[in-house]
Length: 173
Image 1 (tube, rainbow, N blue to C red):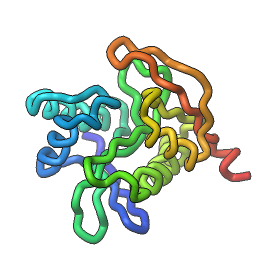
Image 2 (tube, rainbow, N blue to C red):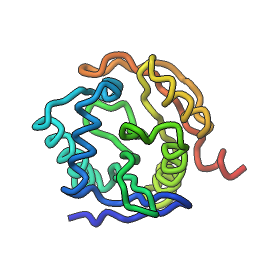
Image 3 (cartoon, rainbow, N blue to C red):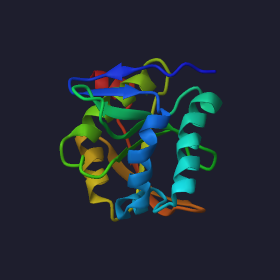
């Protein structure tokens, strides 16, 4: 099994998903905000989604972490490099659980995840796929320095905007 590394930021821990994270994960996927990322889902389908997130680590050697507050270990979302079959290329993805948006968690965690993708994973580029109505994620893309590059149509998710992140050399300049 691929060991899942733990990353830390000033306020957050990016750690392996665990069974104890399922209640907030399932609550997010049951709610209306999840429509940007394939929801709403039943509890059973949310379980499968969590298993898929963990499976990304085993299949690809990378995946998304549970993002938790350092002061309480309360899960606030899911962030990390992502590339399931059918994706155009490696994505930096984030989902914030209900009640945790608007606090800078997505940006803070995504910066750490992008550094991991560009460092240990050796990625030279990354995209984020964003539904056209998801203005919150578009704002995170802008804060991360990503630029809207075009559209991608997925067989299940429909049309999504492609946001290109600055590469490692661009960030170093």
